[in-house]
Image (tube, rainbow, N blue to C red; front, top):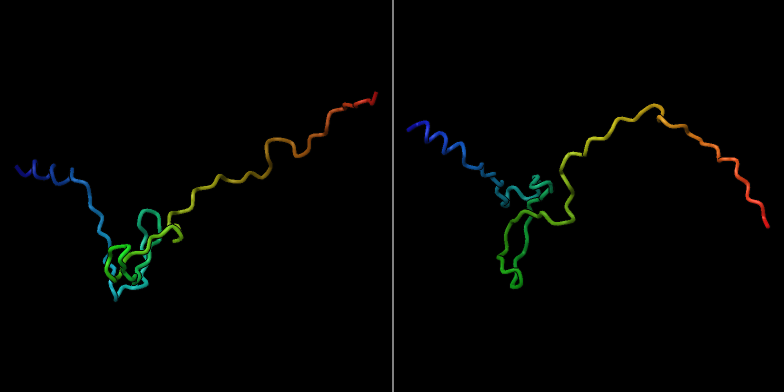
Length: 94
C-alpha cells in the first residue's frame, strides 16, 4: 500500500509556487517563464474588470531573464584563406 501511494505521489506534476505580490513586496522582481516580472500596484477599471491591487507586471516590454545562449569558440585563424585573388578574366569591348 505504501509503495502504491509513493508511486501516485511521485507521478503527479509539480506545481510551481508563485510568490505573493502585496504591498510589502512592491518593487520585487521574479523570473516567470523567461520574463523578469515586477510586483507593482495597478489601478483597476471598468474595462479590465479588475479591482485596484498589487499584481505581477510581466508585459512584453519587461526584460528577458533567460541565460544567454552558448557561443561557439573562436578560432585563431579560419581554415580558408583570407584573400582569394580574382581569376585572370578579361572582357574585351566590341
